[in-house]
Amino acid sequence: EACDVPVLLHIRNARAICVDQLFELISLEMEAPLVRSLRWRVARLVKAGLLSRLETYRHLGKPVLGITHQGLECLEARGHYLLSLPSNAEQILHPSQVPHALELVNIRIALAKGGLLRSWKCELEITSRNLVVESSATKDYDAIAEIAFDGDCKRLAIEYERNPKAAQRYRAIRDVLDKDETADTILYLTSNDDILYLLAVEMRSCRRQIGFALSESFRRSLLETRTLTNTEDSAVVSLRDLLAAKGR
Image 1 (cartoon, rainbow, N blue to C red):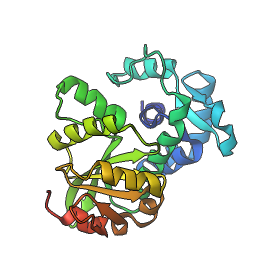
Image 2: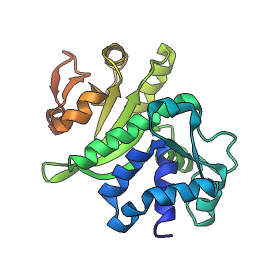
Image 3: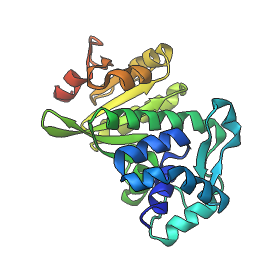
Image 4: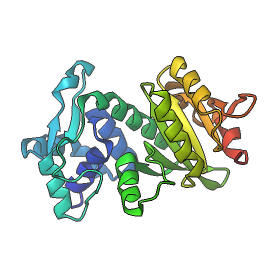
């Protein structure tokens, strides 16, 4: 309960995570004894069938871990059930989603190492809650981070866009974002400039306050990241200034 379960929860919630990323998260958030035993513990959980190594991404040079159906059953037996990912789910994670999951872990680590992160809710947790609420006015964000800001806390909804969507899909997203009130600010992070500018065009008419930035830049600069906004003049401001601004 004290050691295995937290490791399984980290890996389930991340969907996919490199061993080095897991080590960093545990180091930042948990006690030293678990950090020292982590590699042994992971190897034991893999051998027991609760975790698996995702062989598709061996080219990354680092082992990538995912939870198994047996691992989900183990968590459910201890009260850690998610409507968004039950143990009888047909597929836990499509291989194409692994890079997306790994980058979200990088974003979380950057916020934690920068001393900004107060709490982190992953997409699985957000979606599970939204399934209970059954409201069309909530968005299944990739993450919601509560971050320290000017002596207060801000709820920052994070979307990582690795691949562009169809125009019709963005119309549906705009409709949901206009109604959603679960976050103070929405931040779209992208893998390249082309997707960033596409998002800025698609989201320009959205009534919510939205920023757009490169994920790599955000991980490096955090609150000082130069951020494109969905204002009428497409202003570029620091993320700090965006968070301080009033909503549209």
